[in-house]
Length: 172
Image 1 (cartoon, one colour):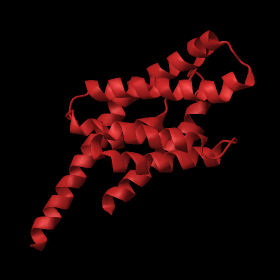
Image 2 (image 1 turned 135 degrees about the vertical axis):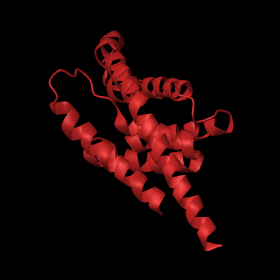
Image 3 (image 1 turned 120 degrees about the horizontal axis):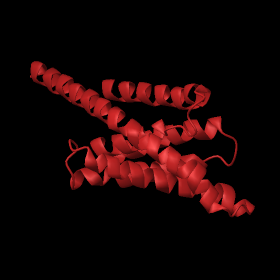
């Protein structure tokens, strides 16, 4: 229960910072996608179910905040959480290279998803402009933010595991 509450606080704080603080910083041309970082991190650390759950929460928050068809962001975030939840079966969570690769893949997939269903369908065909002005800067900022945020999430997750395992042994 404590893990869910801590992760929920992470998601709410990331949502508030991503949508309220980062747009006010004048020198940022694009903002890092903190909710995507949390979704793939929770999926990579906790597995498919955790990735889908936190992807659902992050997607619903974005769907409620932004106008458009409800479920647009939720669909992507749930799939991202699920697909990243497959990775712990094959990779160890302590290495930073796999989360960075996952970050780049997820960010490019997210931006491509937004471009196809948000711009391309409306007849805006200038993908090079979208790539140059939005996708690449946002991907760079998200990868740099992942370097710090993933370590924090991993540290908090390990402390929660220690707390839970220490608590379980005292009850026996």
